[in-house]
Image (cartoon, rainbow, N blue to C red; front, side, top):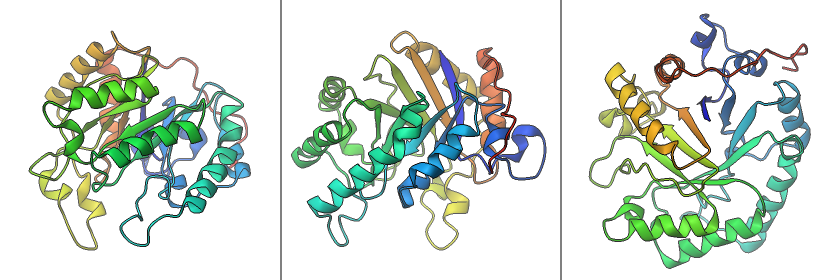
Length: 280
């Protein structure tokens, strides 16, 4: 099975050929999965997630980003206490209940910061994640190239396999110590995730107040999408589902690329008609 989605739902008006922001109900009538970054900044109440769940078809699924405490983003600033970690995980598990009760959670995405390098301490933390989120689908996206160094990356993949963690296959600019290499490796037989950020090297390294508008400013060409099709075909022999998430949306290109890849793969998503009640 192949699924395709985008990051957030409001920012892709071209998905329906218009210019207005989309509701979740409108989005879910076209694509079967969405990645939501809201929990990274603050863990929503279960009632908020229940509204998301009620606004979409029964087979629609969510990829939710792990909270920034859980991904250790503030480690370098103030440090993270064990109590803060346990509180974050407890609140996060409670937040997930509306989705887990209806099989609408595809994965919890741990997008680690660039300073989360390969180390004994961080290997142990990956083990703790599995212990603190028992039975839940966990995916990790590394942003430090040390995890992919020759001679050690195979051991990293084996470690993820043993834990049942989904390795996120990332396409992004990669130069020197900025960005990671494209590593199409499956570590969980149930699910593989590809996250496509674009290949704008200058924008990826941009600094200043407008960096967000530059970082993912990129439109994949037909030739590049054909390369992704080949990768998806290869990964299909190793995992039951391949989920492709387009995040190259600084210029509004993600939706067009997603629909183009869908056509290239020759797939459809069945009945994704919107709910009768739009809760947003």
